[in-house]
Image (cartoon, rainbow, N blue to C red; front, side, top):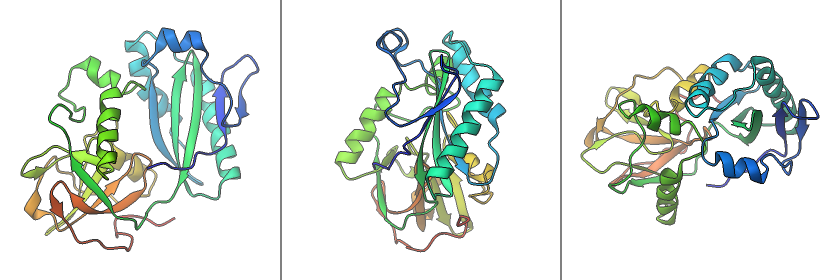
Length: 266
């Protein structure tokens, strides 16, 4: 589902120092692309207007794959500069209250871009079934696989998502009698005992990210929910917009166009 990108890119450090460029600012030269293809540590995280970003946590998250792949991680000051500059520029250029920011370490530089978004969209979506050869990364995987999931190298997931989009689906879950975490986003399922959250937590928990910036209420979590227990469902996109789900796997669900109570409307 394409989304508008902010016309701002924050970069630090660079020969010209910390700077804000437009969306056409060249970031990766051919030599870097060939030498480090697929190993750039990256993270997408929500920024809520008026709330600070935990820059230390962001840098620590990127530090693990950077160390694993032998990539120089810029210092804490560079991270602080680039995030602060981006937040100021992003909210100055967009009226959005929430921005999905993507930070990537590229050739000893920190690059930050973003997509302005809403907390909720009443447009219903379909979540299909994954092909058998694909599944989300999880905590039981080998260390190298979990580190790779923190980089831009997501070719298998990207291919599966393209296949799902061609079927009219935004995401996919493994086939079976229980509902488990989707490949790209997160789920909130309404059951007889209330809403429960389902995501892999790998490489990062979308539910935790939204809770930490006070967009999402604290929810009980379950790794799997039997399909018959699900009365309604919502999909939270990797860009943090929540949609009602009309079809989950093979199960048709009623759609409520109103924002769910577990979301704080900004």
